[in-house]
Image (cartoon, rainbow, N blue to C red):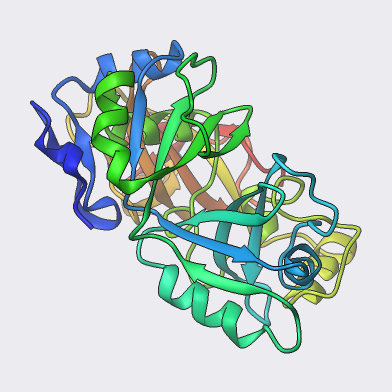
Length: 321
């Protein structure tokens, strides 16, 4: 779904998973600085929007999600995952309940599979699931923003900022009155800086929540009764995850950022050494320079100097080994 904000001056379309919104509007670092200072907004209108209504919505979702939501208070934001039977991450959801409806946004293009799964699990529960992506656009306001929220618009507020579920027809008018608008690359750079994982970037077909630090933010360890819970409990109580997320400071002299999937090796072994992981997301940060998140084997020493492709990388621990 192509955003109308792509018609703004300087807009450069994003590619890949973020196709449909702007990568930037001509000045990546200016856009980052504006967001870091609490001004502007980010067009996330390409993200999937799904709602659940009905008197059983919270009790029902509590049985399906990794998060404790049966007593979720109106206006309280949370994150949750849907796992496979083997405990691998299938969906990452960002939720808020407004007292009558649970609103959630998820990765672009995932709404079909998400709604199909939820519909298959309704049974006798009094719930209604709806794909609202065509009607509502997600707009991000950074932490500290004083931008007003229109009456009736559902807001999901966290320490990182506010997600607005804005009627799609109002997107252009709202952006015009609450700019400057920043592109998805600025948003992603701040996400990487904050060590926040993203489905499809930090995950692959075998990723489990422990590897990314989603334990605690998206997984409640004192609840069960959800698909994949056995794997979560087993790793938590008896084992260790096979991989761990790390934050990398990349050599700033390199012109090209290592892309998603770039092999990570020990610097001491050189570019022909054994692969120990891969780059998940890389970005250019307005203060830190080139940075990245990577998923590496658990036994990689926390102080080891690494290579991301041919680029030297110093690591910071995100998930303890």
